[in-house]
Image (cartoon, each protein chain N blue to C red):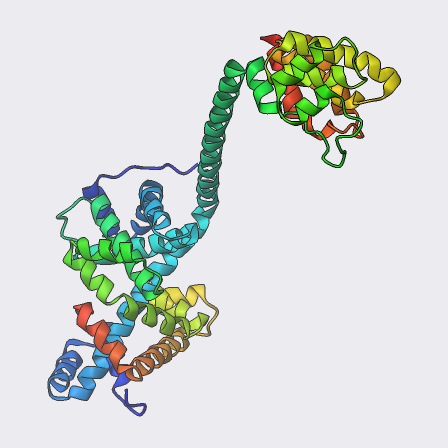
Length: 249
Length: 203
């Protein structure tokens, strides 16, 4: 626009249809001959159309603001949808966990628990052969049947023989014999204090192998309750829970 | 509580063309289409705020196109709004330089169906610049110009609403505001050219 234009007001009036027919005719003649004037009118038309659009936008915006509380509710709805999805995922996870739990429960057995828990007793290597009985030596050499044979070939038994022959029987899956000799070892350990804690743990395992869960549980619970027990870490809450499930089966 | 009326496509188009019809038409559009269109934006990298902003623009564009007789009715209003919403949002993503490869592929795979929409998208940036120019005029100019050109109020009606001494003062003020806006456009010839290309105005 020419800032000094004397036509601007006239153009505005023309745009607003405020000019009389004679003035309109005169201006339209000028517009057909004056490109700059026509361009100025074009810009005024664009300005007017822009304002109309701006007005519409403001009206829609104001209705939108008014409707916002409903929009917030919708947003809450979205949050609810998210929550719904979270719940769905949680439900699926719950089903998976429940499924695993059911599988765990139905597949639970003494043998399974025993196999997961059992590790053959390891004789400390810092002890030499001196002072070791024949049974212990055979056991140390992993000759389990020889250890059993050696035990039964002699009528005189050293203080640790019951313990090692029981270990050999346990390894050979002869739980009745293992229990018998571990029980004897446990009684003698009251006086000898030899392998007392080890006997408790492996006797419990022997009970488990022999499907005597009711007898195994008190021993495992005792070990679990004693943080100073050398086998304390081997008896977890989860293991005890599975034992209790096994008891109920 | 205000009665919530439902309108057929034909009734809605007629409503938009009546001076008092914009308000109920906008409310109807929000009530019936926002959820549907908002989900599209949110499923394509947008937030709920983006969805609200885009829907506002969709409503404005739709009413503007109907009022300018550029909605041909080749599709239902719902389909048209969906196309408008999708194209505006993809254009916005492009502008933000955030559109993913997938979204851009989608855009090229789905051509703009309606000529009215393609014109709107082509001039979108220009319209946004124009809105900023009007905002820069200040509240008084906006009030007077919107009252006069959008609400079609007379100078006397504007005088009744605003505290000016007499009609001539309002008239002068309106004139100065228009002059200022015209000057801003003359300083931005590219913008004026873009707007003119897509305006098809009737003076």
